[in-house]
Length: 312
Figure 1 (spheres, rainbow, N blue to C red):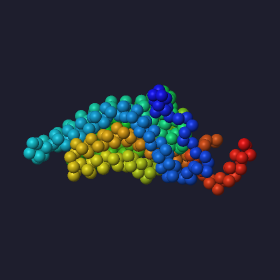
Figure 2 (cartoon, rainbow, N blue to C red):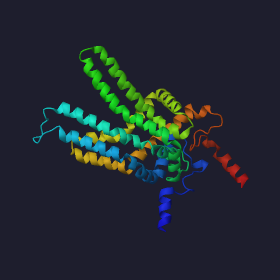
Figure 3 (cartoon, rainbow, N blue to C red):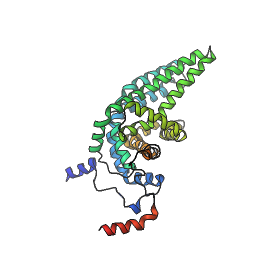
Figure 4 (tube, helix red, strand yellow):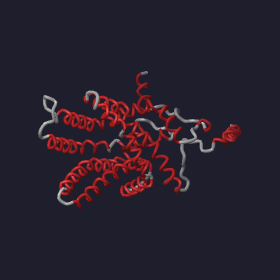
């Protein structure tokens, strides 16, 4: 009995989750909420697997934030004299520690990206076996993406500070300073598409980079919007930290990501990128299926039922 329960917990139920044609949502907004309702418990279980890879990052960030809040004030609650230098030191050390922490998440991210991609378009995926197979096939490219992503914050921060110091004497140095910031922002919106592309298409790494950049630019307002949406929990925690004990806010944010934050973020990304891929990629591939999980022609329900009856 216990073994059967554990198998259902990790592998899911193979016959569960599919809809009849007349039950399918007619637009992606409906599909997202319906699949979120159906797969919510699965996302919690998936997150418990994924969070293992993110624990080092979470710990480093939590310690860095708490160090900033507690290290910049003295016992009397006043800002210390060398606050600026101390702040820069804390940021540098935190960003350096994040490089290996973020990099290792790339090993397991393709598994989560694959499972959430299927779930978000109402296709079945086993939580453990499909997760494991997707990692085996795609971990190299995903690891490289995560490594480059881990380098981006420290590179942008150091270059911004370096050119900022030069800009105090030469105003023209603000140009490379802004360019560096733009590179970081472009990467942050392009990475939204990278892992979904890796698990969905057979592309070389250069193809993943090129297509991610093109899609990010082609859907610029939505690319920025989806990235900002992922920042909402952090923004809420920072806002609450201004009125309550910051330690409680950090702990609350930690618990949110521990329970569902990472898998929910991947699910939202998958729901969005599925539509983008259908519009810009799948529609141009002969024989490729588009609008999976959607009833694009609800008026055909009666004809569909008649065809089923004839087949029976």
